[in-house]
Length: 172
Image (cartoon, rainbow, N blue to C red; front, side, top):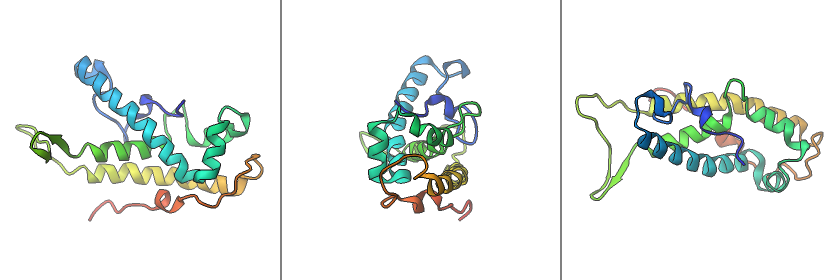
């Protein structure tokens, strides 16, 4: 069971258009978008947790994630009231980055709508990423200071915090 779901993507800065059928999108498009988003959550939430915890601690977490010893970590990773989570920011970034291009019979192309100006999505992606970095700083500081007190047995040795804590320049 994932820590986040599609409700985390209903609000800016990580809003995904088309996941609600009631906002002018067809039910078919909303269903397709939700399936794509659910798949992205399945893939990228695990990827994020491995980067955050390292393989050994992630294995420990995955084997017994319903144990109360993980509850404090989960509370640091998800806010079900405000629907904020560094996991959601990471998933959004990866999901939207993949959607910048489309694949068709003739190869990969950049989709363009008629009578619209296509804007480079990198600024929005970087905003979402940097918001996630701000949240990651808090979580990583907490993990570093509390991992033994939480009853986790795996050592914090192979985590990849550099990628999760590196801000991207908004311009350039």
